[in-house]
Amino acid sequence: MAFFIKDIINELEISVPLDLRERWDNSGYQIKLENEPLNGVLISLDLTSTAVSMAVKKNCNLILIHHPFFFYPVSSLDINSVDSKIISDLLTNRICVYAMHTNFDSSFNSMSRYIAEKAGLSDIATLKPGKKRLYKLSVFVPKGYVSTVRETLFAFANPKIGNYENCSFETKGRGSFKPLLGAKPFIGKKEKTSFVEESKLELIVDENRLGKAVEEMKKVHPYEEVAFDVYPLANCGKNNLEGIGVVGKFKSPVKLKELLGRLNKLIKPAYINYVGDAGRLLKRAAIISGSGFSLINEVIRQKIDILISSECSYDKALKAKKNNLCLIDLPHFDTEKYFISIVKGILRDKFSIKIKIVENNIDINPIINFKGEKA
Image (cartoon, rainbow, N blue to C red; front, side, top):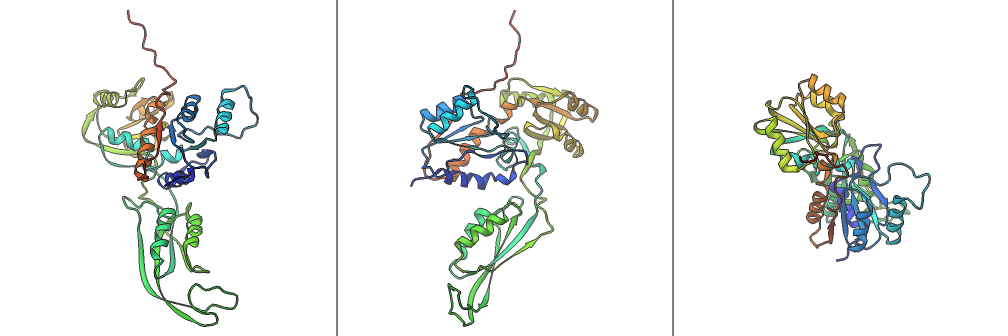
């Protein structure tokens, strides 16, 4: 079975929805060639010359990246610049580029959750859940088409509720309608009232997917005029597993110095900075991959013992010390390098047919830690 690039992206957007991205972010297609047959996928943290050269050499025409290549509108191009050479090589070789940035950080597949699980945290929850308004979508479907409509809505209108998804309810009943002149009824005759065995299918939809869900539902529904209702719900997704950062508890209290050793062995970072008493016992930890110390107030509010993230500023370190909060500051690269293996795992789970996947593990942290010369 041949795959197109859009098949890969459509499946990824189910696991890592674009609507999770922050407003300032530019996740999604960077160079869009969705209708090209897929040759192979290259996964890289960033779009670099190394990544592009590797994609060309390995005949991969889709590059998946974490950090978007384009953040701001391009006002000019210097044809002698490195970035222009990258763009030229991508276009010449017809390579599609797709970024998953803050939407990946807020998804259930985030690096934050990955690190938390590897570090031995349990009862992992979202630190700052994404708030989204929920709706109930009800649609009336004739016998024989319920499964098709349900599966379509599972793909486009299926928010996780706690630890559950694919939630729906079906009620069977009898519907009536009278096709008028000009109608093209799927069932029944014009100018005659018909009574049909139907099912009322109900699902929960979040506000960002409602329009797409209705659009796709109409494509597979057999009726010329689809009968459906949309109801706003008071519950705004408080049990949402999607959002920024995670929080969990240690199976037994651990000293800060022991946690530092554990992370050093697990992550092998270029450096580790910390704030707090090395002998302090820690019960609960928050983890935010990438630059996440801006959420320090939320961590303090929840009375969490320690926040683990990257790029800690001096003022955040002072605030943590004043509020008896421990901090661990890791290199940005080292908290996000797991993006490659996580995305590879998603693709392997999604597609039973083997897809060529190439990992860019050549590019490393551009920041080098100076440890001094040995005497």
